[in-house]
Image (tube, rainbow, N blue to C red; front, top):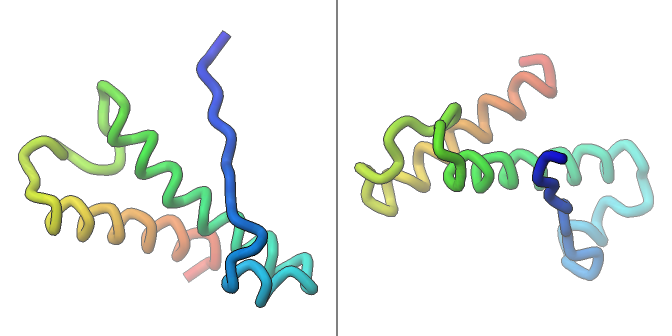
Amino acid sequence: MADRRILEYNTLHEAFKNVKADSHRVEEYVFERACYGLIEVDLESEKHKLIEHPAKLAPPQLFTEGAKQVAKLLNTYYGG
């Protein structure tokens, strides 16, 4: 059986409270949280598919590269 992860998000956070009345906006919010989760999974993996050679990056560079990948995923999701 493959390892599994559970996506957790704070339903008391203001960002969630602002979207919870609209199911479409909740879907977008959860998808965005999942994108950040994918970065975490990639960094913990032996074979990195989203961020190349993360061990060689300083924390600010790692953050920037992660943000770029999240932006790419969101751009694909929104059809940009």
